[in-house]
Structures are given as C-alpha cells and as structure tokens.
Length: 98
Image (cartoon, rainbow, N blue to C red):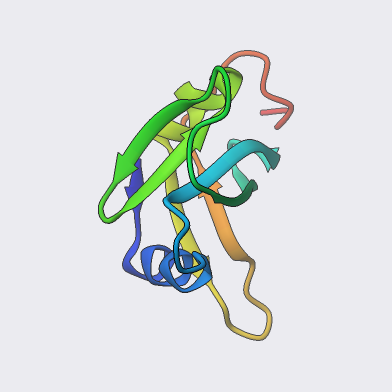
C-alpha cells in the first residue's frame, strides 16, 4: 500500500483517540478510482487481515486484501476534489470496462 502524505494526514485526523486503526470492508468504484469503505476500529474482526502502512493500521476484509495491499491512496480535499481515493492495477473481473 502506498499512502500519499495528504492521505496519511487526513486519515490520521479522522482516527478518533483510542482507536487502533481502520476497518476496511470494501470499495465504491473500480481500479481506476474508488473510495474505500472504512471505519475506526480497535481490532480486526473475524477473518480480517491486518495491514500496516506508514503510521496507520488497517483491518481489511479478506476478499479485498489483494487490492488494498497494492493500492495507492490519495486525498484531495479541495472544493471539487474527490476526497479519499484509491487506485490499483487492473485485474480480470473488475467492473471498470477497460
């Protein structure tokens, strides 16, 4: 996983005091650009894998672990920005219609 400085800063701001990391349960979008579905968490849920990136910890559902561990995440908080986004290499079965 590759976090931009902006993404790391924003995620650190969003993490409540006392939370250990983020639970990542899916994505909305495709490999070309998607928004991760995440929420603060204290531990991995049953079946989730733990991924550390920079100063952050993510507890990731097994069906998206490959995509998440290889994704690049960025944050654009400008007026017309996309917010937190993730992209990764295209894989067969992706709904991006490439």
